[in-house]
Structure formats: C-alpha cells, structure tokens
Amino acid sequence: MTDSSSEKRPQTINVPRFAAAKGQRKLSMVTAYDYLWAGIYDEAGVDSILVGDSLGMVVQGHKTTLPVTLEQMIYHGEMVARAVKRALVIVDLPFMTYQVSPAQGVENAGRILKETGAAAVKLEGGVHQAATIRALAEADIPVMAHVGMRPQSVNKFGAMSKVQRDEELLLADAKAAEAAGAFGIVLELIPRSIAGKITAEISIPTIGIGAGPECDGQVLVSCDMLGLSGFQPRFLKKYADLRSTVITATRDYVREVSDGTFPDAAHSHE
Image (cartoon, rainbow, N blue to C red; front, side, top):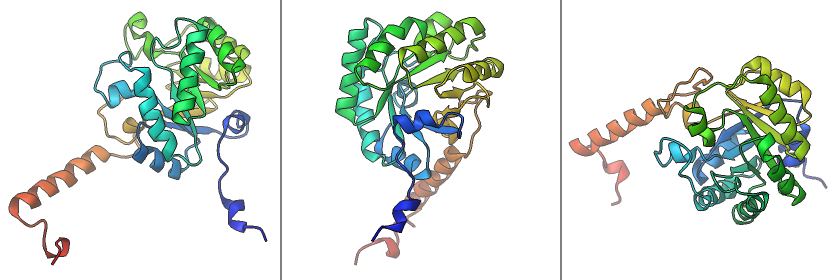
C-alpha cells in the first residue's frame, strides 16, 4: 500500500532540479542566517535559501561584507542547513577565501559542504574566477556564480548600489561562469534589458536582485523583504512591516511588566 500523502509532498530541491527549472518555472530564493528563520522560509515553500555573507551587515552590523570569515559562514550555514527540509541551501564563500587560487577555493568550499550540510556554494565573479569555478565543478562541488554588482568588490566600485551597465563585460562574465561549470548565476544591479539578454543566451538559471523580471528567478535579503530593516532600494518590495509589529509588541510587553499587569493569574503557576 502506497502513502498517497507522499504524492502531494513537495520534492526536495537539489542542484539538478534547481538547474532544470530554467524555462519551466520561476525560482524563489531568500537569505537566512539561523535555524529559526530558515525553517520558516523552508516551510513557506521557497526554492532556495542563501546563507549570504550579507550577514556581515545584517547580523554583525558591519558596513560591508568584507569582514566576514569562513568560520562564521560555516557557523551560520550549519544552523540553516539543519533547519531546512526541502529548499536548496547555498552558502557564500566570503572575501579572500577563493581569490588566491583555485586550490584555495576548493579547500574552503569543501569545508563548507562538509561542515554545514549545505548543497552548494556561491562565489563572486565570472571571467576572472572561471578557473576556480572549473576546479570546484571538477571536484563535484556545485557552485553558483555572481556577476554584476559584486559586494566583495565594493572598494573597486566605490559603492554597494552601483548599477553595472557594461553589457559586453557582463555577458562575458556570465558565459565564462556557465562554461566553467556553474549551475546558476546571481545577477545583481543590472539593467533588465541586459539581464534579459544574459538569461536568453545561457542555459543555466539566472537569479536576479535588482535585475528585472526577465531573470529565471529572484533573491531578496529576508530582513529587507519583511520590513525589518530600513533599507529601501528601488528594486526592493517589502512584503510585511515586521519592524513596526515587533516594536509595538515589545512596547506592550514593557508597559505590562511596568504596570504589573503581566504576568497575571492566567500566566502564573499556583
């Protein structure tokens, strides 16, 4: 006798299923940094959860992602992977953990997969990281590339919000990443016309953030999407205003503790 409920249960998203979604359906991705929130997003049905080095700004309060260490990515990645039952978990390789050499990238990416339970890693770059992407792919470490505005290159670009408009360079980066073996590419802060052209000319999924609707999927930083931060770039749609909700709830708690109405009889043991 078969369990009919198993037929209704959503399939686990692994790397081949993620890649095969191109041209079939749009892919959703959000960031997460801990067990609690990762489990919530997974239950909500997102296709992929990115443990982003954006945690340097979101969790740690830094101005850029550059201070984040490999050990910190492993720490957060392990919590996220432990919570997730369905979504594809991808962990960022942080700054200076793959730029030195392909061998460095393979060693550190291997640590991430081995110590977190995640399914894949992401690194920033295209043409200049093709050798590392190829080395990762040859080591059977699934790797996603990231082209356009690259946060780890903030000092080169001069700002975190600089739209990248060099079509020839962007297309070359995307094609180099694809040829080297990346299973997907994040396109960040790229005009939608260029993102659309890249999406049409490569065979792997493009995941946009500030790159328009022509991409094969979208990613947002979760705290921005939920209205927990004050960040409001043009590309961001806030799906909730949890900051106001949390502030109101906490103020109610503070007031009730202060005036002695909490805890009451219903919330006390006899």
